[in-house]
Length: 315
Image 1 (cartoon, rainbow, N blue to C red):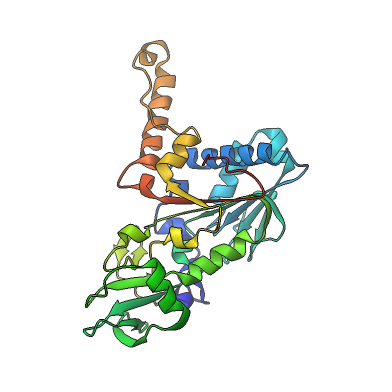
Image 2 (cartoon, helix red, strand yellow; image 1 turned 45 degrees about the vertical axis):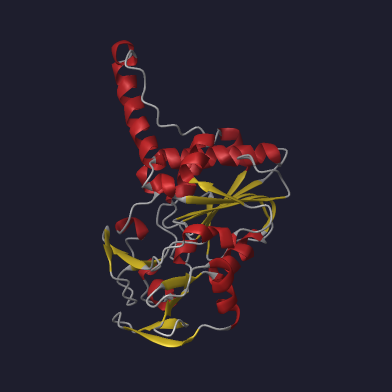
């Protein structure tokens, strides 16, 4: 998975970028970046409006989110904001000069670190229960052929016992999320004061999927997760396991509602008094509804981790 996604010929080094293969909340509507900009404003207020405020876009793709956030900020706050895009791919041509392009998360962040659909691509081991009820690692060749390997042991076995508490039945599968817990803790540690947010496909310990969620995406369609660099390889995130003390998980619909993305249909009377305004408001409502829809983007999990400040989305 590591080589297939991030190696020299890996999926995330392809020139078309992630947007050439799948649509995230960032691509669905500018309302998402506007909501994140609103969250950054709340962080700014909670921190006492520092002279310099950081915004870090983890797994930035081609810089779509950080560009949208800068565009949505009021001029005075944009002037105080240091914007970072963290991504292994090369800097895109024509990217706003105010955005610093980095291969690793900066240290000493004061502000907002936002990781949209990053953790689901942090490589994990897959485990499967054999006929004897033993969790074993799933080994895979480059062509996607699988076989069971050695029993899961050590810290990985401890993680399964704690965070994937399902009866071990033949054929059940799980993704061992320990590397994601570690990855999240490592970036939160780089926040000196502010807020870290991870947004992703997620599940919790009381509803882990019995056969895991490992899958692939190519050109907008779900496909077999063949680790040859031709497709995205992803698995949902156990965000409850990633959470550090003080962290809170909630659904995207609830987070966006708290940030003013409601999806309410505009009053019909507006069509008479301001037809063009009505059409714009109707389009915006449709985009907001997509971002917050049950069974769709609204089901994404948000892990909100404050560092040295209160949670701006409430307790």
